[in-house]
Structure formats: C-alpha cells, structure tokens
Length: 313
Image (cartoon, rainbow, N blue to C red):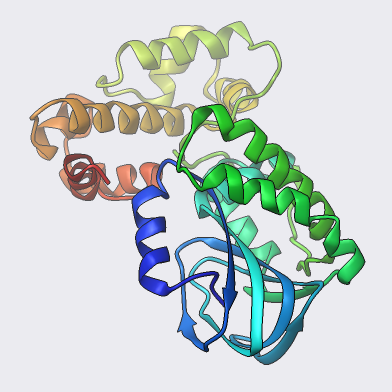
C-alpha cells in the first residue's frame, strides 16, 4: 500500500530523504496500486475504508484500526474495497537503525552491528498490527500534526516536535510488533569494527585510554601497532586493549581505522586529491585495503562517496 502515486512519492523520498528522516502523508485511494518497494520503513495507518493488501505475507484484508508495518525494500500493493484513507509515515532506514542502536546499546558495538541486530530482531518484513479502532483513534491527532509539519519540507525548528510525535506513536504501536528473540549478550560485543559514528560510554576515561586515543588522532598516518602504542602509554598490549575497549567501545586499531576513514572522507569532500593519494595521506598504502575498510566504516566505496558529494546526493 502507498499513500500516493508512485512517481510523486519516489521523487519526494529521493529528493528529501537525506535531510528529512520523517515524512507523513495522508491520502484517499480509489484505484488498485501495483506492488512496489521503497528504500525506507513505512507505517501505514488505516483511517477509513478497507482494502486487500498484496505483499510478502500474501493477500490480507486491512480495515480501520489496522496498521501495516513494512521494512525497507519490502514489496507491497493494495486493492481498495471502494476506497481507503490512510496516513503513511516514511522513516529513513538509517534513522530507524539509529533508534534501534540506542534502544539496545548495551548489546551492540556500533550502527553496523545495530543493522544486523535489527534484521535479526524484526525478521518479519511485512506485518499487520491490529490495534483496534479505539486505540488507533488516539493516534490520529499526532498523525495529523506530523502530516502538517512535514508538508513544507525539512525544517530544523520542527525536528524535535516531529520526533516527539513519532516516538509517541511508536510507544503505542511497538507492543503489537512481532519480534524474534535476538541471542545477544554484552560479552558478545567484540568492538572490532570501524563503524561510524563511534560508541561513547558516558563515564570518565582512563588516562591511558585518553592518551592512546590522542596519540592516534595526532598521527593517523603513522604505522601504528598495538605494541608501539602500548609502549607509548606504558601498558601491556592486553591491558591497553582492555582499557581502550572499555573507554571507546572498540580496539585501538579499529579506532585508528575509524579515524582514517573520517579523514579520508574529508579529503574526498574538500580536496581534489585522488582516491589513491587520499588513502596514502591517511596511512593506507593499499588502495584496495583502503576501499574495503572505508566501505565498512562509511557504508559506500570511496569512489561512490565522492560521486555522491559531487552530485549533491
């Protein structure tokens, strides 16, 4: 199901997704909509009428009081029974992953770990939540305000109000979402990935961990080894690893890779340096290794990252 015509909403999401993580739209639909997928999470609230959904769960009826929850890239269409009025929330996938990260931060290393965790936890990509007409009705003023706030496009002044309204809606509907038990524990966090942004513990840093991080930031291009860094801060390698992971959520060398990826991204944004020159400037002699670590950290290859910057995507 979609809350508007496909070309209009595809353009809407393509043009604003990077700067507007929440978009709300209401629409009355009279004609069938062919199955289509979006690169975002969709929550579709049925306000009036009914329809038959065509999705990964087969054909299912929906009516007033139902909410359709669709993961990103989940195909779904609809055949209205006469007509159906819906309000659809389009949520940027990275924004949703960020909320999952903070909700389950005790179990997760970084946002990349949160993405895998979310896929594991919400293993059913298409769900119908039966809240009932009365319970769903209490959401309608919040949904109407979300629609009103998002009609004029991105606005920093509206962000916190939109987020507050979204969280109020999610607080009501999440108990109805089916989840799959995720087998995680705090001891399973390996903290080896260079993922951005980094995990921060809200606690005082050990002096040695702070010193080690400062040394890495001051000379990211140096050929650091765990042994050389441990020597600088007068700790054994094992002890340094332990205090560093406790402070920063990742090993010293993973932290170094994160810093290099950040610096390389700045070079690709703000200078004309070639990808090979940028990788060497931050301390990676191998372009293929740089590309691999950069992609793990940033999510795209260096060439794709520069292309997005140049094209303003």
